[in-house]
Image (cartoon, rainbow, N blue to C red; front, top):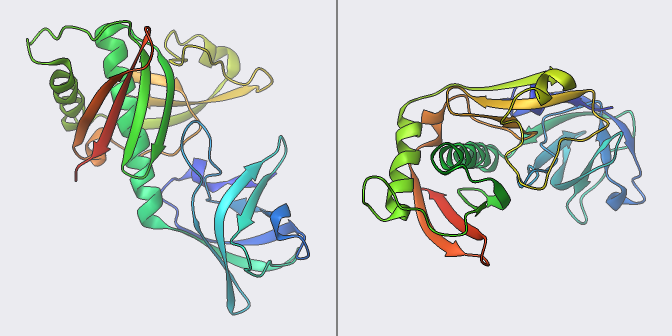
Length: 247
């Protein structure tokens, strides 16, 4: 299996590796590396973009596909595909990855704040660099204690947690230990993979602990300021909160 550098250190942007499988005659089959910092997508976070540099040429990576055993990087149409055994240098699109890390951490801060203050679970979500949305099981728009409109009160609460500069720590725990965390799953209809003996957990210290496989910044302050752009009704039981990074 590919060694996941994105899990070991999400700040890695360039690294050397070797192609362990590819089919130059069928680029859509993908490229498997022995070690990779490309986040393959999942949990609402899109896959990384970047390049593989080898023998004086480059292969743009624009998507990824996962199987139970491997991670396949998908090249841009028309780009050359390195053969198995080729030594390559991988490079991540830093601006895209960094924005996605900040956005993903911002969503966890939003999720933790809504759960803490209103006890609502997540029913859906999605993100792109710098903007995202999250759906919550809220039959009605809550009344903020401050008397402000809920949209503004929520934005203020999220930015207060960002300013608190809480550490964000990724840990891989034995399954039984992880499942003992009461708040491990904040998504209403989701559970961690039943076959996994270990579960990766993202801990925003003092605010939010939940199972997650994505990439994150090291502290809430690194997210920057978040704007709650809109709160929408999505049926009788759900409210959709749209956010974006403003700096």
